[in-house]
Length: 464
Picture: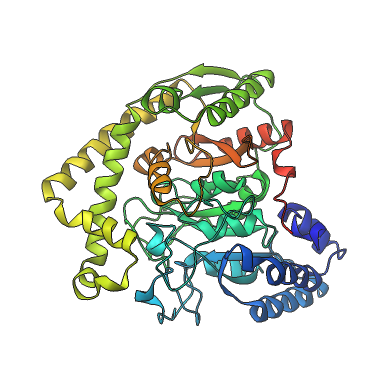
């Protein structure tokens, strides 16, 4: 079971296509692992082993008949429970939507089903992809697989936990201010939000229309690129979708970083905010690895982190309130307390506040993108701190805002979180790699080079 639990998508695809691994046996092993361990971690909000076995049997039959769909053919996955799967509830982890049955698949669900993926179930989230971790909701919050007494990041909390814990090799999350990259960092996995509009958001419950991204969490960089190849693409039904073709996101993996120009946004985690010493040290150690691999590592600067943070908060609060205004008036008691408080923040904003924030956004984005005239990618912090205790409300509120992820929702840039080691207490550490719009392949190239030079992705939580 453990061997299959941490099989990469790339390796699983090779074994399955070569008929050396049965999708049914693979799926049964992961089902048994979820049934044995998930009661401790609450990764799944709705576990669907019957659907998974049906998908696996179909995949196995197709492969035996010589029909190969993709690298996800016969490979299990999970969906954050704001993503529609036809016939199942999409609850957004909220009492408000507990009886909300999806009438059709989300775009990413369609893509994964067409690719032959094996659906394992819906994964925990923070309520409506914000707030959390909350203990006053119909379902408990997910917990960190490295230490269940600690926070696992959010809002794609179950996606990070399920991937790190070996329940699935891939999970879909969403990211409005860092909600793919936060659980990736807290759980020691890889999480990518691509360029804004690269992956359709149709069928994904919105938090803030102009900031929302959808993307994969995986245990390796290559796996992440493999999945993004499958789920990216234009969708006329999503007004934010980009009408552009994309190349193979795995194409540059293995080329290394020699002579690449890597810019370091050090002021984000040294001056604008002071990262925890162990987190900062892990980033500096990673930069030394890049330099040893032949990269030209140089410092770059942009607007202060606080400007990006304020801009993100105003736009998010205004757009989220517009979505939730009716329910906040009619049934405020049905929200968790943290979520309700955050959504009501949007009620006090004026039209001028929102317009001024969008104007600031344009300037911040323009100035940030100029950096790529002198560097190929940018590296900076993801979280400023390792995971705190899940039951420490004040610590969660404090550390949740201590991050450098929101700037890249503002700019719409591709941004990937990767692990960089562990704290003295055994909790994951990480950083971000950021690229120019539509340069995901370059981001993956840099991340894969670091991953190959280190051993962090080969270490797994001590689940028992």
